[in-house]
Length: 441
Ligand code: GLU
Image 1 (cartoon, rainbow, N blue to C red):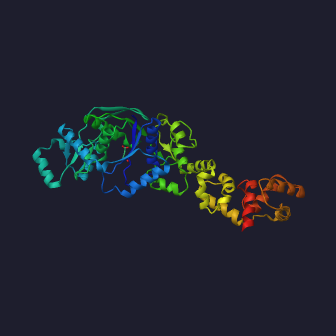
Image 2 (cartoon, protein in one colour; image 1 turned 180 degrees about the vertical axis):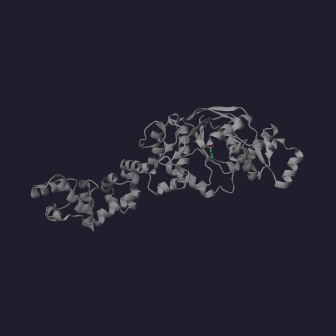
């Protein structure tokens, strides 16, 4: 059965980059009728925070990316220790004692000589006595996985055929000197034991995948299908990594971005299919195919979310937005006509308030000098209430006949006088609202 996971480290809020990973894994699982696991990668006790775990769950719920179960790496440390023992017994695990400064120096020397900065495996030559004295001097060493120097190959769901020379990769550290288990092995143990069949993640993980394939094989596990999506850049192609902090999902939510707008964009951005606003999750699932994504960096412009949000809001019935309408101050009995007027004229729900204020308080009229007589004449012709959907047509017809004005010269001054703006809602829907409310006030 298809099983996927989204595996954030709870060291911060999720941002648009993580969302791409979460969404792709979610859609693959749902499309196949499989299982979607939310896995919390919290083996780092210093950087992992419970508040981020809660925030990740809230953000996922806001988006409607429901998981089938939660797993936490911090509760599975014994499983990782067991796997580490297995690798030790197989002779695939060795202790190394270089300090970060020493490693840095080695890397610099290699680079100076034009060589790739790959760990030189010096620790493999240490005798037991040397290890003993290094341990006494520096504390426990790190544990590195000894890669087999052969080509590691897989068919990537997005990148196609990949072949990496293991000799060009440093033996990965899987356990730190202080005993902390690192993601590389924890993830392998989890993916294997949880029967994960498909792993989609960012292309910054490609080298990890190569080493993880060897670790999975060493432990006798079954390799999932891997797919690596391209990294997001800003609209100009600039690196987004530094700005991701400002592109947290909760900030986008604060700015009024609607989940469907965000999901619709992310499910298509960087693929050969056009971005289309989807109306619900079922449509997103239906229209998703990971193989349609390309390896080129994907440009992301936060501004693209707003037209999609506006379009999504336009499609909603009042029942979906009634809290927001009430929150803007609109009385329940006017909610229906108010929403019918406002929905076409908002970008986010926070714009409702302004339209409500216009209905309730009226606007500072915008009347050009040359229009002042015309407006006075028009106001005198306003029909008696109550106004309805036909009032605007009846009124403007009467004004037209009386003044001889027509087209833009007729409508625009009236709009500006009534709303203080050159653009806005259909006057036919707005006019009855203005009147009802004003009459009450
Ligand atoms: N915790 C890892 C990360 O956030 C998970 C990567 C993976 O999907 O394997 O980068």
